[in-house]
Length: 402
Length: 80
Image (cartoon, rainbow over all chains, first blue to last red; front, side, top):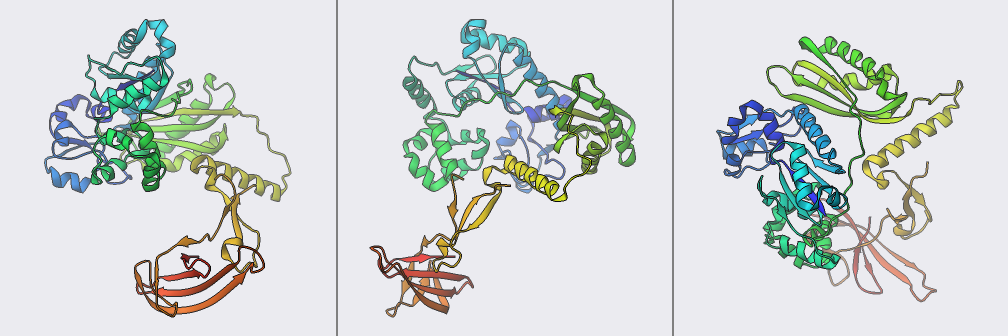
């Protein structure tokens, strides 16, 4: 049984902060500097103008010239979301954070601890100390849909049954009248609802009535996934691993740019590497963030190093160019460990064979490309019968083995 | 990828040919010019002989296409 915790318009609310009166008017999150010109989350009144997240900025302004654009605050969002996740984990929940403002956890192991579903929800509410919406259902997607239907004090619970088949049928009945727009909750299906609506498929029930093969023919993997979700199925949860918060921050006396920021970064790296919690481990990835001047919001970037590092010089070389993309001078600079690597004991030989070193680098590059883009990221053309008069017999595409 | 995958696989294409077998319309586009044509016969000694009449044509939109007519089945295929 999955519990979904939803904070609607989380990023917009955090970015608006004390100016929350703005949310009564048509308002939207402005595009992040350097990103594509699309609006982020939108207020209810903006939705009434037909504006939705991901809409091109020009189109949004054309639909509502009074639209207020609020600068995003990725730093504030990440901080608050992390605090909320830790609070939720304090009741024993293994949370899968789908995106800021939306998290799910498996409640089955907590039912006895807290005394049933109501007990789990009460414990979560007490731990979070923030008005969230709760949905409970046997599958993750159904729980997310239930949470969107819930009110702050009225969770929506799609009760499970004894048998798996009956449970799935119950979920399917619950989802049948719902709009296909809800499929946008799955990041892979953000663009699908618009196409489905154009084809006259308005509800999840209508979608589930199609044979899976038909949807696969038309939409590929996305079609299969949409059919699975609409039929009450979903993949298993992937809770985040228990994390340690190792973070250093530096308030800058005067709004800083250029060399002053580089010095601040140098100091932060040294302080981070000196933290006892590191226990000699190398750092695999970090999050560098800044609070911008004049309530310009925040700036945040995650940086994954090519290999786990514990060398301040190499870390500085990797991180310093990122500061160039700061959209405004910063009041505060922060550096946090996102993921630790193995203990820093990787000693290099004194004399390295250049060919072996090149091959090792190539293997590492292929490994990283495959981690990012999947196993098909590196393939090789294998000639099997190059002289054949039939082109399809000449070559094969096979996985690259370094 | 489950395993090795063949490259340059043939794909079905809709071709309208004249009485002499020369393609006139490929995939809804009129053929502007025929650049080359050739015959390939293979495996004639087996139960599944291959017999193809290839055409390299340029369509009115400037696209270069290689299509062939499977002389056994009479179907048209595209190949790159």
